[in-house]
Image (cartoon, rainbow, N blue to C red; front, top):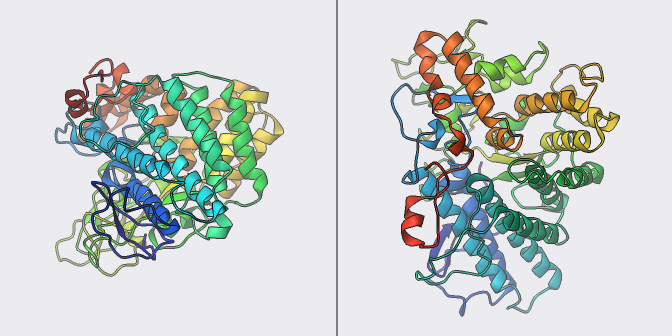
Length: 519
C-alpha cells in the first residue's frame, strides 16, 4: 500500500529501507553512534529504520507470510514440480529462505538494540523519548517472538553488535526469551501512543501492544511451554483491547482486504499492519511487497499478474459449513481466469460447485489494485499483523480455557460470526470447554486464513502433525488425480518440522550454536 513518506537510513554499517508514514527526510550519509542520536529527530529516524525491517523480504515482505507460513490445513503448495523449500517441509539449514529470515530478524533486533543503547543521549521531551523507547522495545520483542516460536531456543542479545568478531552466542532457553519478550512488551504498553492519535495502523499503538501480548500469552500457554497460567493473562490483555472501545469490526468482511490494497486505513478493524509502498514501477528503489502476487488467482496477463502458488484446501472449504457465511467466497476463489492469448484481460470463469480442490486463495485480489501499471512480482498490498476479529477470538479462547464456555466467550465468538452472516453458536453446540475449544480452532481458520497464523496456532495447540496427516489423507483419497501432488508437503511433515532448522551459515560462524533435532 502506498504511504506518504519514506526514506533510507544508515546506522553504523547496516543499511535499511524505511517506509514509515510519519517522517519525511532525505537520505543520510554514512554515520556512527558518535555522530548520530544527537536529537529527537535522529531517534525517530532510527526508529523508522527498525520499522523498515517488517517489510523486508525475510519478514513480512514475503517469507513470514508465504514460505514459512503456508503448508497447513488452509493451503497447499500448488506446483507439481519438485521444490526444496520450507513450504513443503523438505528444507534444511542451507535453505536461503530460512537463512534470510533469521538474518533479517536479528538485523531488526540489532537496530533496536542500537537505538535503545542511545535513547538517553539527546536532550528532548521526555514523553516523546518514552514513546520512541516503547516502540523500539516492542519491535525488538516482536522480532524475538518470531524467532522463538519458529526456532525454539535462540540467542538473546540485548546490546548492539558493532563488530564482525562478535559472533559466538549460545542459545538461550525459550522460557527466558519469552520472559524478556513479555517484560519488554509490558513496558512498551505504558509508553506508546494511541492509534486514534496516529490515525493509521502502520505504527505500534497501545491496543496493538495489548493484542500482541494476548497472542504471546496464548503461545506460552500452549506447546511447547504449556504454561496454562498464561491463559488468564491472554484473557486480560485481549479484554483490555475490547473494553478500550477504540476498535470495532468492519461490517463488510471483503472490504477489509480491499482496503489493504487501496491505501485505505481502517483503524477500527486493523490494530497493526505492515505498510507497503507502491509496486516498484514508479520508484524501483521501493519494490513493494511480494506476498499478494503469490496468493492471487493465477493469471499471467499484462493486466493482472497472479501466480496462485498456493491453493485452498478442501479441508478449509468444508469448514464453512454455514451456507450464509460470506467469508468462504472471499477467502476461497469461486472463479478462475481463462488462458490469455490476445493480451487482453478476459472475463473470469466460475468453478463448478464440485471443483473444491482446484480453487485458488482469494482474500487479496489483484483486481483490487488501483495502479494502472502492474508489476508481475510486486504489489501495493499491506499485510495485517493484528485485526480486531483476532482479538475477539483470542478473548473467547482464553475465557473458555479459564472459565469454560461462558456467555462472554460466546458473545465474542458470535460477534465475529455475525459480521460473517453465519449463525450464532450456543451451548447446544459447545456444552463444555473441549467442544468450545474445537469450535474456536475452526473459527480462527474461517476468519483468519492466510494471515500467517494457522501453522502457529496448530503448533501451540499441539495438533499440527495430526492435522497435517489428515490433509494428506484427504488429498490422496479425494482429490482429482492431477492434483494429488498437493499431498507432497503433508507427506514430508515430521516431528522436526515443529521448528525450523538453524541456518547452516549461523552454525559455521557461531561456535556456540547447535542445530535443532532432526536436521
